[in-house]
Image (cartoon, rainbow, N blue to C red; front, side, top):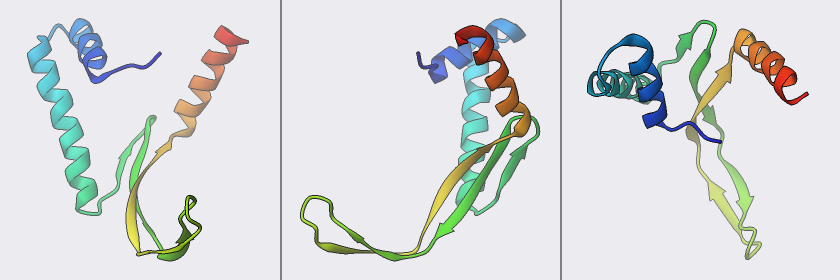
Length: 100
């Protein structure tokens, strides 16, 4: 089962008493702030949750799996998310209880 942005908005609105419109504006603002910061090359750390980072990947020669032809891949940046130890531990413990 996946949780969508609409589900997150519903859960936050129910828990805080804010309207769904207000909550959606806050969630959208958070997402846009993360995106804008990463576009500027900044890292974001949310203690107890994780960190968003931008990493540079070096260029290389790759192969097209369909044709086998060599393809040059230039240097590029990729966004990464690293889960905090606390969140990783919490998820593991909870799922072990539920699933076994």
